Length: 325
Ligand code: MLT
Image 1 (cartoon, rainbow, N blue to C red):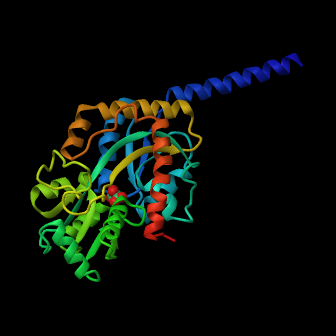
Image 2: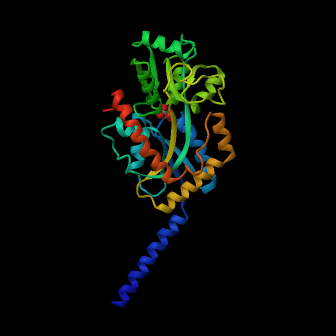
Image 3: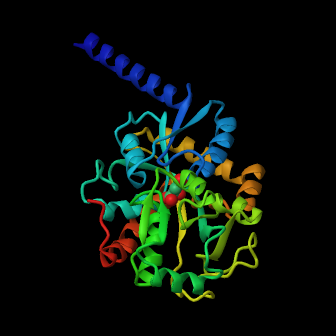
């Protein structure tokens, strides 16, 4: 009996040691971060900047995989069902919260399918249009949209996307439904806006800053309470006649539920370093945003944010009566 107990103890110690060793040596191979939108959009931009910095810190390649479709829920579902080993992560935004209400048949349980690594950034949005669109200011856009509701096309990245949410808030604010045109991300949507194939879009500054500064699209307002340093002459929605239409797009880094806590902690520590990386800080500033503080780049902060945002947006979405299924 003693021999058996000794063998059992040895096996348990070996199992623990190898598991603990594996986790302490994590990552031992390439890590994949899923972006649930097409390449070239704001979520992709934020992820690649953060992933590049985390990769240097962790000493392993971090590749970005774009899994677009259904407003980000396809990509989120991919990660929800991935092995919880720390080698498949998800960088997603406010859509994690809004999709919990918008989709009544999600392939995953939003609050129980993920472990939380931390918040990444909160990005302002801009109401923009194709360069040759007639209205010259937000007041004019509202009047034009109300008079041409069946013609004005609004690009978004699918129900559940930040661009969809902002477009929904805009249409609710002007009490006029417009023609929505979904894309797999606002990267491809921006291509059509630049080509005057679609009229307007509400998108994050991480995707619109270059075009606004370059004059290749028209900008009407920012959706933040205060004007942005990067666009001092661009009015807020409050100033421009749409009071209360404010929304900023927070982003979080997630792992599948059941990922070893030591791995989650190591990822959170690496994320915090990336968000303090001078290159990341500088690039975010050029794109109109700032990294989340280290105190927010934690599992507890992201969990609290997601739970609070699901509660906050549920009644707003229900009042708008927009569901995906
Ligand atoms: C969105 O609109 O939700 C996304 O930001 C689109 C994207 O990142 O491509």
